[in-house]
Length: 151
Image 1 (cartoon, helix red, strand yellow):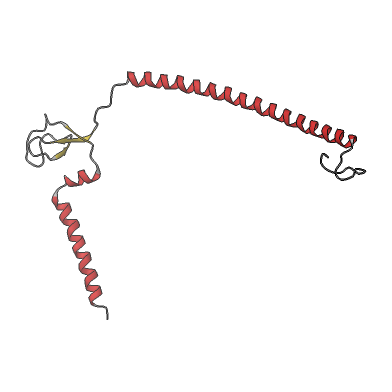
Image 2 (cartoon, helix red, strand yellow; image 1 turned 90 degrees about the horizontal axis):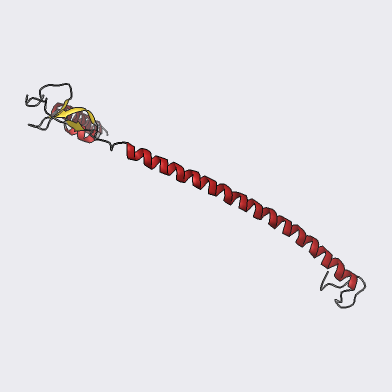
């Protein structure tokens, strides 16, 4: 190799044959690396072409989706089968003709928008809340009694 003493060389002097052998080995390595580089470049070009095709497909699908969205009317707020009384604001099932809270006619009442569970619970009769509150009080009384009986 270059810079290494040959078998018969003195003090790092490279003989002509060693130089030629080293140079031939480097050329072989270079040829292998050049071939590998060419293969990788071909693979890169193939992937770039594939990516461009997929991108074109996505753009076409985006255009198709935009066209479909343009043809569909915007969604209207859907009701959940309830009507809100215009007199007392109570939410009633849609099949009721009169409000359960005040007796007003519901035929002209608009459909109530969908509500979250918390909002729907706020419009429930107070008896349910009283029953829940009573259950909580009874539970707490039981806990306090159990703690009081502990030694």
